[in-house]
Amino acid sequence: MSSATEAFELRLDEMEVKLTFIDDAVQALTSADAEQSQRIAVLERALREMHSELSSMRTSQAEDPQSEPPPPHY
Image 1 (cartoon, helix red, strand yellow):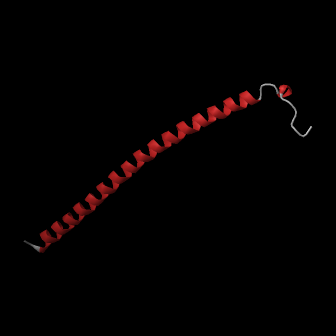
Image 2 (cartoon, rainbow, N blue to C red):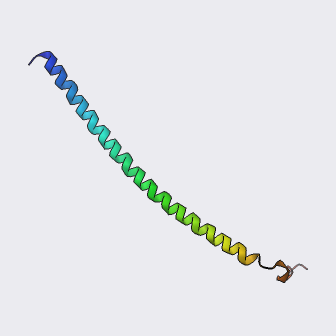
Image 3 (cartoon, helix red, strand yellow):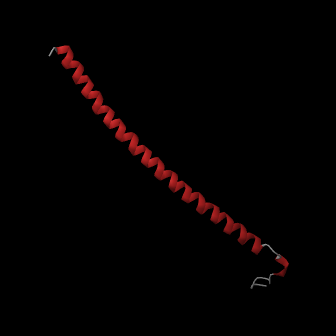
């Protein structure tokens, strides 16, 4: 084999190794992205539930402030 062919094959092998590492990195990032998307969806759902609970608590407490008895220190 000529040295040019050997050099070409060596470069090709190096590129294949780098491509394999890049493919692994892309796969890992894709998995991390999917996991983060699921976690964000769970957190958004929890936030909506908390907002709903807070709204219902505010409505139930703000019905008629005059009907509440005075605080104990009066």
